[in-house]
Length: 270
Image 1 (cartoon, rainbow, N blue to C red):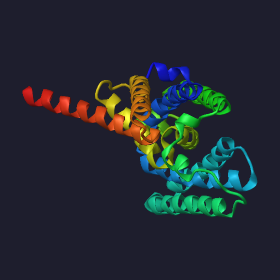
Image 2: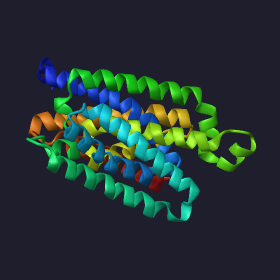
Image 3: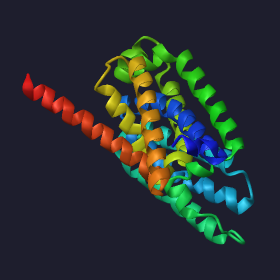
Image 4: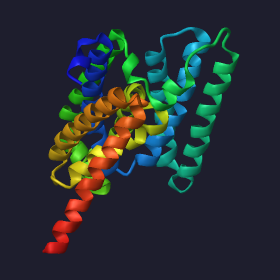
């Protein structure tokens, strides 16, 4: 792995993994705590519509997918708050519609030759410098927003009714949270792809929940776990010539399994 770092593509891959892990640790924790995993999954799959739009109209892929995903996420968030009984069905429809639109637009794109698998399962080895700068900027946005609204988010995450009674703008915070989750999903497309992005959002948080109980502590721990998963997966991908996104998730599953087994054995001994 050390000699691999002499290559530019591997340096970019490591940088992308570390940058994505920051957003993954912070937003993954908030998504899990607020029980928004299904909604985030809907955004992840609907984001493929943004990929299709980008290639059909010849636009930059990451910014176009980002705008499409944020818009779709806000629609999903609004529906889920207005009609909670039918929210799952509505999210499922938007999920399917986004993916179908993306595939159709890619089929209609003249001279289309993009690798479909790279967007479904990740292509971290091919991240350009421009995307790294954009990922760094998105990290700054996420860190700034969460730091500024940390206490309102903390209260809203665990007791929304109490937060509203105290005058906290719970609805606006909910929309902001969903929009930031969409931003994170787009960042993680490069790392794990649309199919595996939810695993990368939830696995580090699951591991972090075993070692800390505070929201801030979970965010930090999840970020560190995500970095470990990504670096380990990159090593597996480079060493055994595996798909990078799948290797990262496989590494994460192995670590989480070991943590869970160790916790079970520890509890059994007690």
